[in-house]
Length: 126
Image (cartoon, rainbow, N blue to C red; front, side):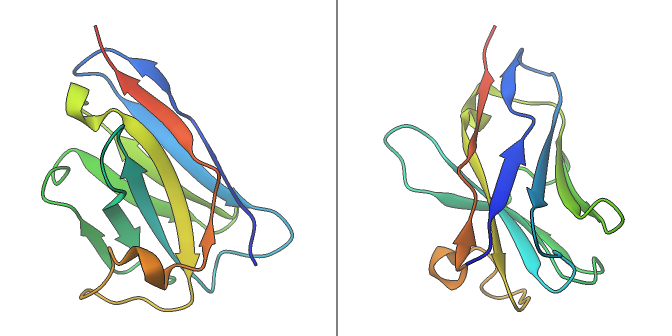
């Protein structure tokens, strides 16, 4: 199982920005589609965004379109989630996950991702 590590979470005011990072140790992320998910207290985990292994395809949840951007840096073996115009409802633990294929149809299907990070807390509050 792949080991993923998220970082970059924190406390930010509404309207602010954060950039989350997802890295891996001991293996390259190049061959994997990477998804970002989040789980708010009392709610189910939901898909936020996903990027193909080539980086040419991305998907976003409707709630974050136009505010969040997913990208990957192959040299740094890292996938990023740039989050702008943050809202209190974005407060959640954010996870990255990996799977060995990309699809526009089931990119948010949690059970299809075999490897997960431990999560990073994002809190949007004044």
